[in-house]
Image 1 (cartoon, chains in turn red, brown):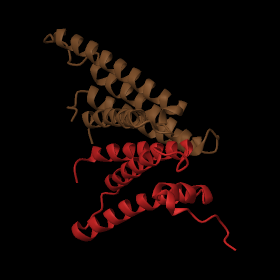
Image 2 (cartoon, one colour):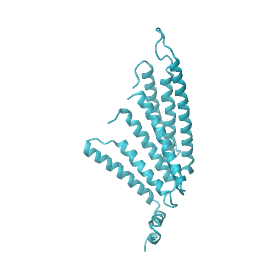
Image 3 (cartoon, helix red, strand yellow):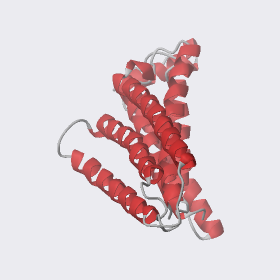
Image 4 (cartoon, chains in turn red, brown):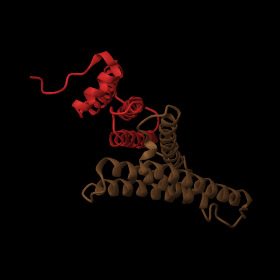
Length: 109
Length: 144
């Protein structure tokens, strides 16, 4: 016996995503977190490997902007994301922007 | 580090915040999104407050730069006696950054007093930096 309702793919991928998000409420949050970590960790580690230093504030704001854009796309249909998650994503972007712009006081690296 | 860079960084934080929130609101309006950032009163208040503070900053800098342009320096007077332009920049710009940080922290951590200490500590550090930059620039050294 399945523990959750299986998504119905006949209605399209958007219906499948919404039904998955309804069955597993943490799914949109995990997806956004995955996108954020992928860009931030992957980018900073790649830069460190190539240049020796990692500009973490830069990759943080880049990842948070990408996460914000993905969250905005999720708002087009009802059921994928709620306003609280969207607010937290935007707040994270603003905090990373504070870190990024204040880190540039030391000059370009 | 420098006085100019510090003020410019604070203003860039404000402009980026206004641009991001404005983009989110307009994206939702253009695409008839079901969930919109404008439903969140906190972000609406943040956008309005930032716009108001930027207007105040513009007015303050305009006034002080006008006074500086009309000022004269006699042979026996030391330069930058008032230092209004030097002082008003970080003070006003810091207000806008405080709004951004405060509302972002409140959205993530809530209004509990346990987490407000991080906000208090961070704002104290920024204020200290602003005061030191003002003192450094006003006492005759070249702001960079």
